Length: 179
Image (tube, rainbow, N blue to C red; front, side):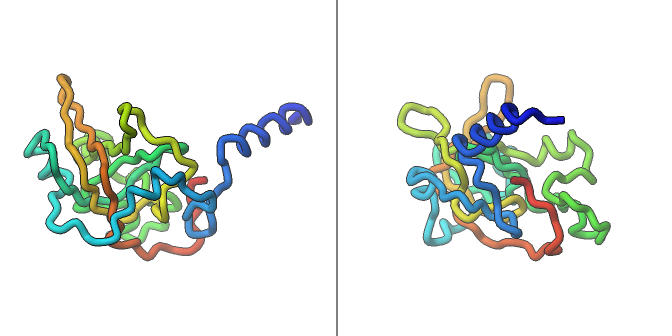
C-alpha cells in the first residue's frame, strides 16, 4: 500500500520536473524550452549521411546525419539516433510489438554499431534541459545537423545545432508510448 505522503511527494516531483506526459500519439504535451524549440530547422538541411556512414567517416566539424529517433532522454535535448536501415520491431514482420522503438528484435551489439547519441548543448557545453523535444517522438525519421565527435575510446556523439523531422511512421494506434 502506498502511503499518502509518498504519493504526494511522487506527484509533486513529477509536476516539478515537467512530467506533463504525452498525448495518445506519444507527442509530449508539455511545451519544449525556448532553447529546444530553437533547434527546429524549418527547411531540409540537404544531403545527409546515414548513421553507419557517419561513424565510418569519423569526426566532422559540420555534418548532417539522417536516422530514426530510438530513445529520447527525459528532461534534456538529447536522444539516440539509429540507422534507418536497421528495421524497428514490427516494421518488416507485423509481429504486434507494443514497443517498436526499442529495437528489441535486434542484438545489442548490432544496435550499438548502428547508433549515435545526439545532444544539444548550450554555450558552456552542458546538455540543454527541456521538458520535451519539439514535436518529436521515438521512431521519427530526422536529419540532425551538427558536429560529430569521437572520444579517445572511440565513442561517438553528435552535438546538434539543428533538427529537421523528415517523416513520422504510421504505427498502430494502440501502442503504449513512453511518458
